[in-house]
Length: 50
Image (cartoon, rainbow, N blue to C red; front, side, top):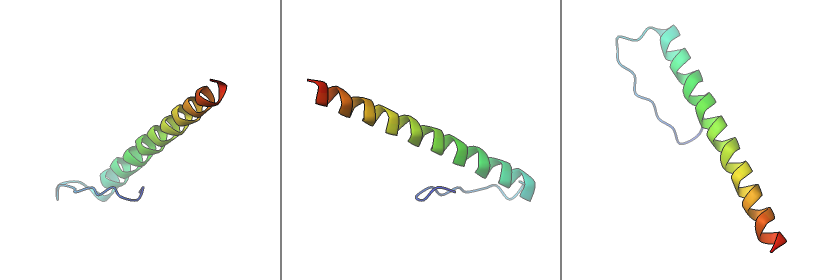
């Protein structure tokens, strides 16, 4: 799980369900991080070209 993310689960979730939720959130966080990195790189390139 990415640092800084806390997940609170219902007691009704089975361990397998918890794992799926954790993996899903970790994947979404990684995609968002990659998209932000790409956007920062593009912004930096645009600033250098001006």
